[in-house]
Every structure is written in C-alpha cells, then in structure tokens.
Length: 202
Image (cartoon, rainbow, N blue to C red):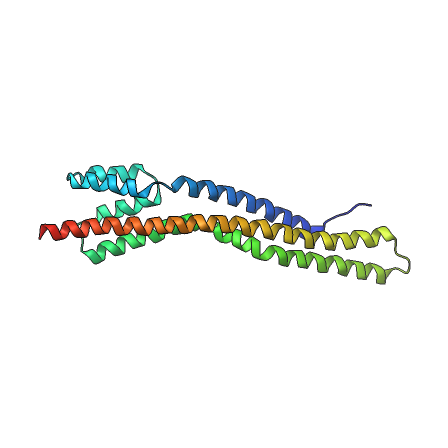
C-alpha cells in the first residue's frame, strides 16, 4: 500500500520548514540585539557629562542594537525642545521594534492557518473516498485506505505544525516584549538626562 499525503500535506510540510527557518533566524537576531542597556546608557551618559557628545554618538553608532539607535537619536536631538526630543526618540523606538518584529507575523499566520489547511486536506481526502466509492461498484480496500490516510495525515500534520509554531511564536514574543521594555526604559533615562541637563543650564 502506497500512502500519499496529497498536495495539502506537502504544503503543510513546506510551511513547517519555513516556520523553523523563521524561528531560528529571529531567535538569534533577538538574542544578538539584547545588551545590558543600563550599563550602556550609563557609559554614554558619562561620556556626555564629560562634554564629548560626538564620542558618545560614535559609541552608539558602533553598537548596532536598538537601544544604541534610540540613544543616538536622543543625542542628535539633544538641543531640541523636550517634546521634539521625545517624539524623535519614540519614532526611532517604533522603527526599531518594527524591524525586529518583521517575520513574527508570518510565524503567527502559519500557526493560524496550519489547522485550517489540515482540515481542508481532511475534507479533500474524504471527498476522494466518497467519489471513489460512488464511481465503482467494487472498490479495492487499498484505494479506500489511501484516500482515508490522506485525509488523516493532513489533519494530524495540521495540528502537528500548529502546536510547535505557536510555542515558537510565544517564545519570540516574550523576547520581543522584553526588548520593548528595555527600549522604553533606555529612552526615558536618556531623555531624562537631557531634560535635567537643560534645567541645570537655566
């Protein structure tokens, strides 16, 4: 007996492979951009306190992480008003989050459509079974088993893809939320520093 999963089965296999690739690419990228933001901001502030704004900006530009990009934006807008500074920092923060969040939506979509594709494969398999029975007076048991197994394999794979993909999405989402919190804290700390410096000059 030769069991074929059918086109839906292989589509689910392709989605599963894509999900694994997306997960590991995003996982290592999110791990790479996480740094000790408190030490970083403290170091930049120490440089700024010494009057070396260009050096502080160079440090940020050499550190290719979202926190550094947000701090660099704050340094570039340090002479602007408090509102302009905050808007610039918030805009940069949203841009950084958007870059990190790319492809996470694809992972969520795969997790949502996989069980539906499994259900579609199940329906197609059982439709084939009904058509086979209706078309012939004598149907071989192997033919019935093939079409039935196609239906069952699609359903099983649909669930088999959905569960780990949702777990992977959850893991990445937790990391993303942690990075967002760190970005917000770094943004508040650096804008607070410039606000305090501005007040001290008055």
